[in-house]
Image (tube, rainbow, N blue to C red; front, side):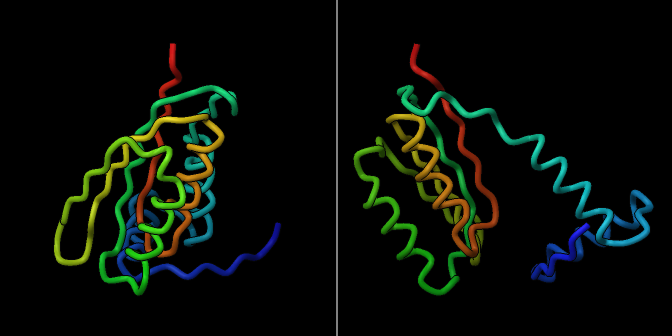
Length: 133
């Protein structure tokens, strides 16, 4: 087993602590291991890399995070050939939701979504790939 150090914001660690109490875990590590396993199992199977797909990339991010909006815009412009349409919604004073409708080869769509979802202060993200018939 390896030791890993994580940095979690207060809201997220409070949710982990509530899960520890609710399910009776002995400690946070056990809960985080189970959550990690569940998250890995929930990862969708990827379409063949060269298959043309339509996709929806949905993500929530911290509007106030330094330079994040600029980075996300840069990602979108770097992949402008994939984007069909976007929707931006202000959820509250801190959070925005964006939906990007995309079309292209699965490999390019996955790469773009991975870049966006892995960006610091992107809280939730998911790509739904729909292979062309």
